[in-house]
Amino acid sequence: MLTPPELFKCLSDETRARATLLIAEHGELCVCELMCALDDSQPKISRHLALLRSAGLLLDRRQGQWVYYRLNPQLPAWAAEVLKLTLQANADWLASDTSRLCNMDGRPVRTCC
Image 1: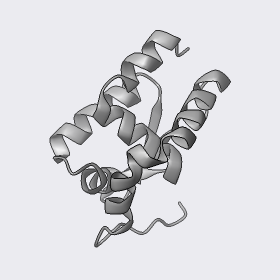
Image 2 (image 1 turned 180 degrees about the vertical axis):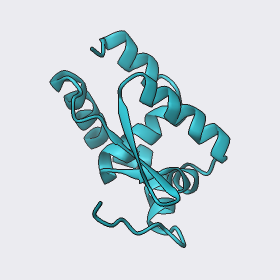
Image 3 (image 1 turned 120 degrees about the vertical axis):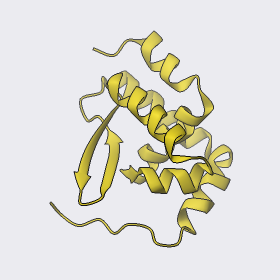
Image 4 (image 1 turned 60 degrees about the vertical axis):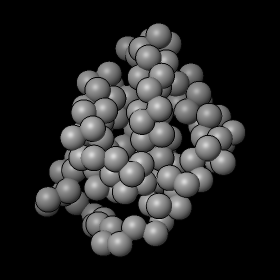
């Protein structure tokens, strides 16, 4: 079970906070989308996603060459509410990340499994 210290420790890093909020906003994103949105390297993004996944905040799924990350639907209600409120209150903080993501060339197309 995710505890408040674990959640806030995960979100205390700016890259992890931005990635988590972008995933919350878009439903699911792959590493390449997060690399573009956060303007960062694949190893760094993957390392942060692995930490978020091991903490139970994110789940992943593979579709062909892509690995997609989404919020764990089993998050405690309080944690989901914290993420929702943080996302709603910080659109300006994420604006440049969202803009880079929306303008990404070659964005993967999701298909039903």
